[in-house]
Length: 302
Length: 142
Image (cartoon, rainbow over all chains, first blue to last red; front, side, top):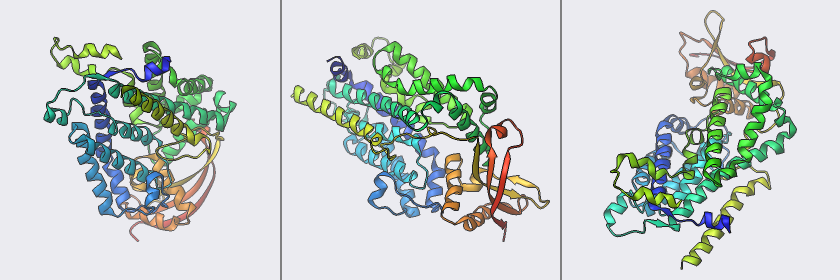
């Protein structure tokens, strides 16, 4: 019953709208910044084409004009998603486009796991009433809308649950594939050394803390246990503010750590966007508004 | 109305959570549903890498960048690009493709090789190369 009331607790429309804007903005910037990846795939890389996800539907490489068309559509519909313009349509189309891009990007022999979570989040947002306020649609309609509703709260809970589950699954994978070898740090040590060696052989820069961690091998076991604990204990972030804050701080450190020791960077998680559904994100706008506004008070319902 | 809506939300939650967890059963990675297996398996200290390096006019080895090798800045994609070249037997073609991206004044030859390194020694700046087998070589500008 307690989980049920948590799952179905009403939330202000502004919170869901803020998630649409912030998560949408992250994905939009991510796509724009990755123009080089579109260029690479438009040039028909020589890697074997191995369809992943929705790409199975057509199972052939896209022509260069189609790849650039996909890029342009992502930019245009992404702007519609962020601005909340004709969201009922632009949201769905944008979610499909993100799903197609993420699938196509991973269809060349390397699954790019840093694109999974934001893809699922965009799909959930697209199917929710995330443009009921703070959107062009809301400005055009001018009709009274419910300000606090389970219709806004439930998708936010779902986003948070999905974030949490992805970490738990990653933790399960480590136990399944490495067992106790993960816990004693030896596997982590070899991963750190492998990543540093690989990136240097490919002409990149050694991760800044790789040498330090490998040289101080006593650090590896606590780091490995800590990483596994962050993953398996992710659901604690759903149960209360203190647990949430502690877990999010740990998860951010975990991502900083993987970047500093292995040059493995999951930007959506590492920059904190994946964790926004756990917070009263509509309050980010408060300092910009008049103090007399009472909208922030609504957030206490969360 | 609200109650039936809540029931639908509960049901949808169960379905979505089950879908997220489903890949664990067949243990199949996919997108958007994944087993997130990255960096979860065991690794030995001695590992093989497919490398692409340059040689200048003096015969000195020159390290190539990821954009030069695979038109990317992502090491996962660059490594996958080289591994696939060996996997599908297109290493000569990939060698020429890399050579076409290089300036002859800096690099005159490209070599693709399979190198076995003791990775911990590599990170500690100790001698790490266990074995090197050249798989393909091609001249820049040819």
